[in-house]
Amino acid sequence: MDGMERLLDIALIGLLAATLFHALRLERALGVLKRDRSTLESLIAGFNESTRQAQEGIVQLQEAADGAGRSIARQTEAAQHLKDDLAFLVDRGDRLADRLDVAVRSARAASGEASRDIATRGAPAIAAADPPARMRSQAERDLLQALRLAR
Image 1 (cartoon, rainbow, N blue to C red):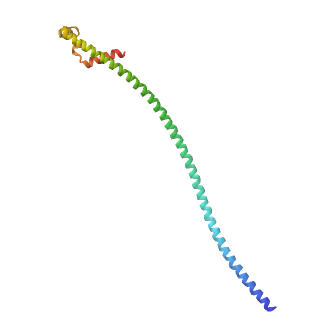
Image 2: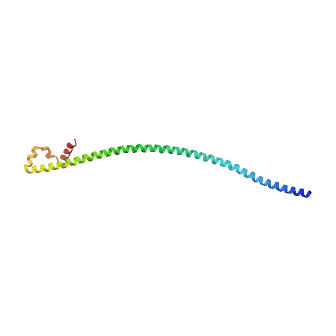
Image 3: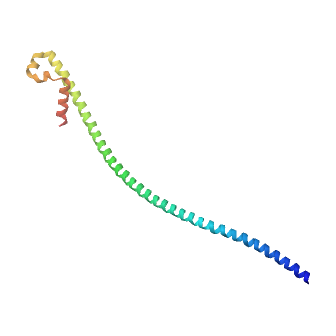
């Protein structure tokens, strides 16, 4: 059995050598894993910090958006009031323009009658009766008539 024992010893030595080889490889792999683990932990910590900063940025953006929305709402409301005021003024302006148009037309019609009177009675009688009217232009007379009607 001496040969068998030797053979068993050689097989045992071979198996021990293979185990030692694999143990050394496993030791290196664990060393790399430990080194990579510390790197991974620092990467995770950096990622967590970046995520926290991003969340704070999102909160700040939401607050800014809410503030801008409120500001836009106030401006829209003010613009609506101005729009209503302008619509009212335009309506009043239209009515006043219509009244002015009627006044101008009636003044022109009266002016046409006055022209006929001048032709029939003569210019000196009109000039003596109303000296300021003679010096006013037709536009001034129309404006005065419109202002009287506007009261």
